[in-house]
Image (cartoon, rainbow, N blue to C red; front, side):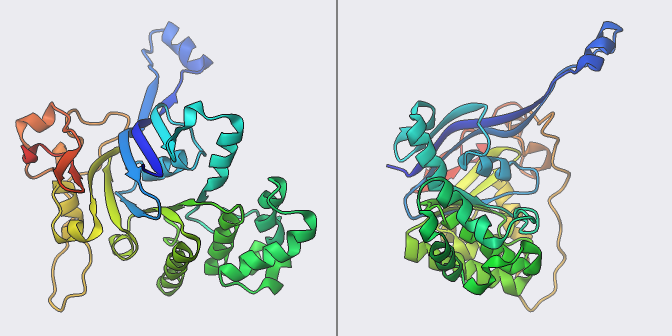
Length: 328
């Protein structure tokens, strides 16, 4: 049984007509409601203890999917199950337990921490409110969390602006760990940090995984980070999953043309010089996504079938899924 399972999960953001727009329509403006399909029928399974890397260009919907998994947003369609229980049929107590078991670490450590709160309150507020600790345990528990992420407990009375970017991200990690989660969604958790600090935080993630038996959904656009950290990689394009495979197999030989293009243009440590050619064209607007395969306007191997028929995400080898008509 998968720890987390998504079945045909979609998220639409609808722009509804306001009073002025409705009035304009009475005068013949012809305005219509518009919907952004941020996530489009995504199915995904994540096993206990697994690290799944979620990769895609900016605007592909990966952060929205992460927020849906973390319970910050509700899906428009589809089903989400956690440890075999459908979220829609959970009791209030079970849903509260789910919200504590799944935590999220955000990209920007400057924006994700309340600048008016001291570090001890940022970390200790949630476990105290949910009854995980008592007031008498508050100080020692906060100090324990700070030590766990490599920060000096003496700094617990400070405010976020008194820390560096890497230290703030560690505070964000400590805040997530404070409610004793089992599943963590990392949304570009190292993207805003210096390269040397990125390495330290990534090593911290791996160390915490071993010590606390954590499961990660690691969202990133950095292929090198995903290759280092993940057991399995899921590739998204314009709201849809186009390929999923074990990390080593994917980097040895991608199946989907979009994944092939991403890997071909990833920077590599090679002696010879080379020219980098971006994927042709621009990402289509999610307001008006292309018919058929969303990637067909930019795909060098597109066929007539790709323009009209949506490719199904199906198994092409044990543990490997791909959504491409080239697979037959």
